[in-house]
Picture 1 (cartoon, rainbow, N blue to C red):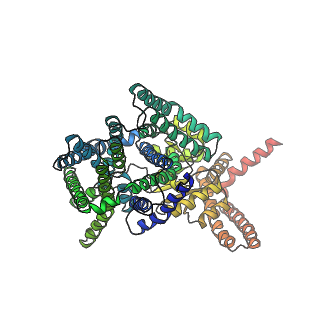
Picture 2: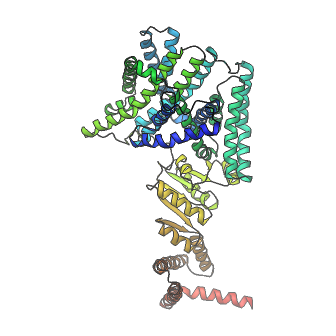
Picture 3: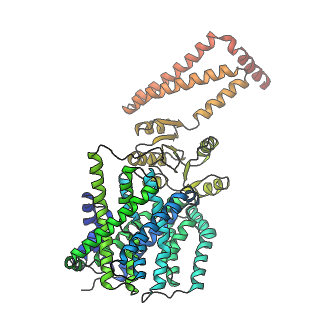
Length: 607
């Protein structure tokens, strides 16, 4: 029975909603949940949906979006800071695994060319699986986590030429013919557009458009690059990756990550479901002994090779197995490579199906191996340390939300003391102006959890909320309190009423707008009128202390919602403050003689 694309999409989404939460509930991971959903929908399961061309196109968009997001992570400074882990350690890991698997594969009777291909494909690891496992265990900031992440970055970069190479060596029917000059021209066009045009477009839409238009422009960028690269016979992911790298230093990076994350997750889920639906379960049932043996050989060999690499990298003994498990599965790119190789007749249909089964089962095994590692560590009373002396936290400990006059002064103070804050602002003009002065300001709405997460809130210590809008401040506080409770919040209050709201929301560090500036101006007025600077400061300090005492009393009454008592207390407190200042004036008349003379002289001059 033929169904339209919306019906197919509905079926796939329903499978996501039903199967993936169950897989996460039992600790199997998101990727395995998608694969199981695909198996359930495929010919070996309910056979209620087939892989239509439209669904495949959306699935390919998921891979392209993932490559674009990876490119956004590869800021030049970040790459340089991690250069040893990415280019040296990552290359070592990839070469050792590819060589070892290729050599082992030749003993299975395969040709040398096919063995090299399988070695390169299976040397890749799943970024989605490894990053999720690390996040679940707070390993991202550790020496082991940084080493794994560096290897994943190198693999993601290596995957691009591998995809292109397979497309050239074994071109499949229906794909555009590769032409060197048009392909080179397309790559140059992407680089020039990303370098000189996209930034202006993003700034223009951010200034004159809306959030929806900004999301639309981000999708337009990715899909446009995807179509351009496909037209010249080059992997669509290459263009998206290059565009992401070019925008990695942009002030819009965090907002792009946050806006594209839901689409990336959704379409990447469709990609894994299509892979799951294509898994030949009949082959698994008929050849389960052979496939089990191949899986055991692949996972065992890769774990052994990775353990050796971890030893060379001087990773602590108890964490070497963690390093191996995190990188010990197949990759989502390996599915793409297997599909390209099968379509180009580099692999037979049976060989491609077996390779897909081994990759999928290795992904399923990784969370289970990690659980075994956790259980073993618990029994040995030697829990893996989440942070050690080798922690490299490239994220700033301070995030400033809002970079107007208030935030700029605060940011300059931090910079002058060697602290480089991560700054978020939603005013494109401010971003453009401050970027010229050397500040690293990103475009983003700090009230959104995903934007804060992209800005490094999970590893930061302080969030300074300096935006010029009470409702926006409250929204940021609520989001940060809910999703990042470890952050110390420091907020700007518009007035006394807003300060009470922030106190009720649990903010301990609050600065009332204009209060301190007004006090300092008052001190200067007293000094100009003849009072000594020390005396003026003392009076200002007493006024500040009395004011905060008054606010504490008023807050209790205000919380009881007794407006009449609130107004009465306010009048009494003002009268008490005035009487206190008059008593101090009588106790120290010499302090105010100069002040009185100055005031009298001013009045006489006016006459």
